[in-house]
Amino acid sequence: MDWNIGNITIGVLSSVLVACAVWRLFYKNLFVASRYLSWLLIASGMTIIQVILVDAHAVRVFPILYLFYIPWQFLAPVFFSLFICSYLDRMWEFKKYKKLLLTPFIVFFTLYAVLKINALLGYSLFSKSISLTIGAEWDENLAVLFAFVNGIWNYKMIKNYERTLLGASYKTVLEKTNWLRLMYTFLVILCSLWILVILYLKVTKFERGMMAYYPLWLLFLGFYFVFLYIGDRHLKTKKEEVQKRQVAFEAMVTDFQIEGLNKIFESKELQNIIGDTYDVTRVLSYFATSLFDKRNQDDVLWDIVKNAIGKLDLEDCVIYMVDKERHVLVQKAAYGNKDKGTRKILSPIEIPLGEGIAGAVAKSHQWECISDVSQDSRYVLDDMQRQSELAVPILYEGEALGVLDSEHSKKGFFTKQHIFIFQLIAKLTATKIKQLVKKESATITNDNGYYKELCFLLENEKIYKNSDISLGSISARLGISVTYLSQLINKISGVNFSDFINEYRVRESKNLLTHPNYSGYAILSIGLESGFNSKSTFYAAFKKHTGVTPSVYRAKAPFES
Image 1 (cartoon, one colour):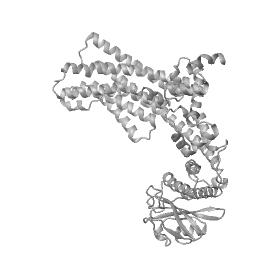
Image 2: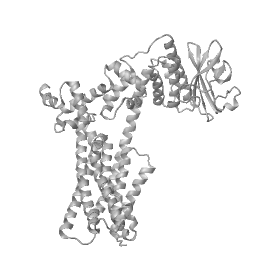
Image 3: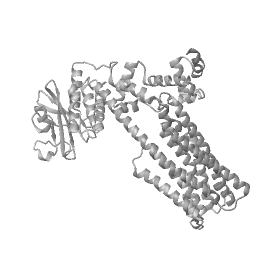
Image 4: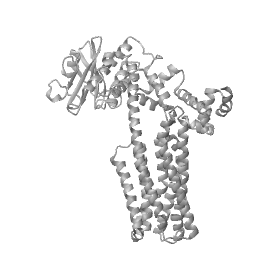
């Protein structure tokens, strides 16, 4: 092997860079943009390590190393773009050009595979000189060109981002992007130097191996270490900002959801929420909205037990209803081992009022939480032996309608929060059952708290810009059922979900089409920026809401204004 001070230094620094990136990836709690930064550093470091192994002739001594070579140099720019898109919240732009960005890597990964097979076959497919030309000159020249073009594209994306934030403080925007533009400027300069070195070597026919590249590799390594240091500092700031926004957002959402729950529960009941208020209100909201369209008692009871398992991570949930004539509790709905997905209870049992834990709760009207049922002689074995039990009465105006019961295989599983949520769910169940008995129906009004929350997300978070948004994703974000959300939008806005979201997107695109900062933007780019996923859907929605095409609107708007 031919090691020297130059390639040893570069090899060690590259290995340290990769080690730091791997450590960050697996041992630090990183959010998405930080992960992409780690992968960028890994790809960049591995690119240099592979070349150093060739320069030191290590692959001649251990030819098997060639089998593990992959074109990292074509992955590094992709991770650079992923990092920038994630950091600036413009992942839609990466998705738009994803295939184009990944094509060079896929092509050269295939070429690498062919070169390895050719070498194993003793260069029977094509000569060794052709292999070297493909694996060295083509590879190197195209990789530098790709990195150069990618750097310019990312720089342009940063500038577009700065123009996009029309309502934000320009100073705030620059604090977020100045360092990125500086980094990309240096990257483009380094790539330009690399191209000049390649041209110099071609003209002078330099014969001293890869030594001419040593200064460049050291410059690139210095760039990546600086990028890591500055990037970590800015990413830490961004993470803190995101956490602050999340706390503020959760507080706002909690207010909206409590406003929605106020129509079902009394204020004093909601004031006693303990633990994580955001999670509790979301659970209650889902239960309440899921019952909205239920039209008979069986649907109500089965929906409650199913959601109790799904939303509260329980093993078992059973609802007993009181049979007044026979003075017993009858199992009416169950989720867990008692049900096999057919809405039919396997081996239903009956418990006399006053007997067993559930029977005692129905008679006393008081909840009971048993940490260890083996120490309670009242415990009634049902489908299997468990360790703890929570039973809460379903009461309406002082009358026991039934019992909401859950068991768990772990002793002391149920907490104060479980007890509190079960009490509110029991009240919710009783209220809905009595509504059905009285043939009353719940109504949606314009002051609905969930609708206010939805509008808040659309107007402040601009969630409509996500082209993959759906009823399911929004209902999960709001913590309410899909059916309820659909009815909510139809009732208050008077349009279906698709038209409702597209109305916001069209409003956004109208603003951008007539804004001077976007005069150079293609119309389709503005549609994609606004949340549409194709030209056809953008043009169809725009014409439906405005009566004209985007191009006609852009041409006429300045005169109309």
